[in-house]
Image 1: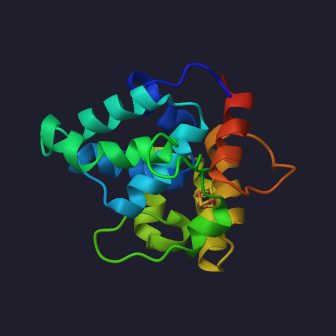
Image 2: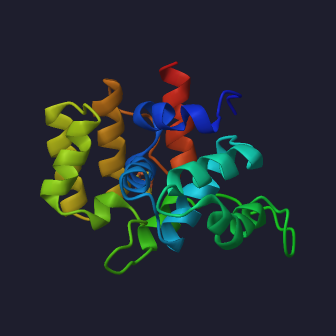
Amino acid sequence: KYGDVSAANLHHLAIRHFPLCMSHLMGTLHSERHLRHGGRQQLGLFLKAIGLPMEEALLFWRSEFAPRTPSDQFDKQYAYNIRHNYGREGKRTDYTAHNCTTIVGFSGGVGDNHGCPYRRLDETSLRAALSRLHCDDRKVEEAVSKARDGHYQLACAAAFEGIHRVPELDVGISAPLQYYAESRRICT
Ligand code: SF4
C-alpha cells in the first residue's frame, strides 16, 4: 500500500491510477453529488483497499455528497454504512474489495453506475471515457474491440497500456486493486 491516500488527493489519484470502473464512479459522484448503493459499495471498498483511512472516507463522502445531502442528513443516512464497510459496526466484518469477475457480473438498472464500464458503456461513451484519460488512440480502439467481443479484462489491459504508454502487460487485469498497484508501481 502507498501511504499518501487521503480525501484531499483522491481525485488526483483517480485520474492517474484508477481503472475505469473506479474513475467512472469518481466522476459520476463528483458531478451528481450522489451515487446509488451499488456504486457506493464498489468504490467505497476499493478506496478502503488502497489505504484510505475510515475518517478520511467519511470526510470524502460527506464533502462529495454536499450540498445535495446536508452534513447532518449524511451522518444519519450514509455514515453507518461506511463505518460498517470498515468493520466498525454490526458484525464487525472486515469487508474486502470486489475483484473483476464480481464487478463484471454486476447488472444494474437505470441510474446505476457500478459494474465494469467495458461491459456496460456503449462504444461512444467508452471511447470518450478513455480519451479523457489520455489513452493512446490505437489502444482505445483495441479496448473497444475487445469489449465488443466480451473480453472485458483484456479491454482493461489494453486501456492500461494505452494510458500508461507501456508495451503489453505480462499479466492480465484480475482486480481493480491490482490495476491500481501496477499503475503506482510504474508511474509515481
Ligand atoms: Fe474494473 Fe476489472 Fe472492469 Fe478493469 S476489467 S474496469 S479493473 S472491473
